Image (cartoon, rainbow, N blue to C red; front, side, top):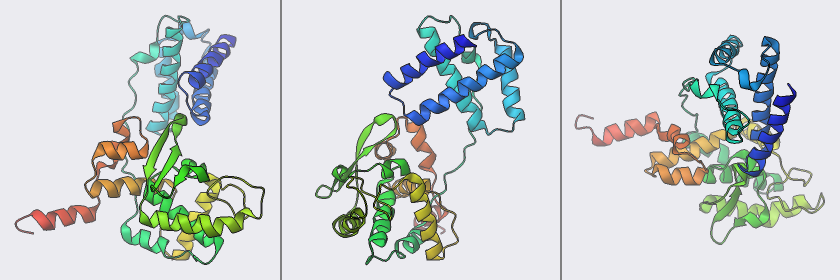
Length: 299
């Protein structure tokens, strides 16, 4: 399987240099290819050039037997298809048997989001007289007010936030940058935290330019954000199961429910493809009822 390892090294370089993919994505691609290489070894398949459509069908059967989600299987096959496509481009292989494989249909799950009353509960629990309370409020307002990913939020630097313009420069997937506006609530919360709470927290640690700090004054990580959100839910006494991505779902859902166009929401979320944004075109039951009551003659 040395040829697989050598080919994988070339493919990783391609993903890093030409495609500018994130390290997270590259690690997943590599793991999927290495997993298939192990399958080849178990089945006595001599090399990448002799893999057939029937071999792939057998591999798919094994993945299904492992009871993996359709989305997970799709990602594995997509990684291998890209790998073979690259090898074809480099003239290292002539065929791409994965091009014959159709990916499993997505499960069409509707993203979970928060209702406005649930948000109000969360926004009311932070003690704004304390540094951590100010930080938590700014964190909530930024996540909901911009729809940025948790990893993007954890990576924000002081110089990225323009309080005068009400925008933040976000470093997204694949090192793609975008400017995202935020409203008056997020601006007020961020201003208070940067002038007061953050100044107190930074005194506990070596100087750094991260916006969001932990209680020791060091940059807050994604896991820390998750923990903070869980604690805020407990304080609000709300019967909610929150994951940080829900704020991103809520941001997109509320914008679309209030009439924002899909292309604008795509731009704000930093989605490369419109299809990624279209999962948010569902509407809440309250919005459906409101529309019905406003427009149906017999409502």
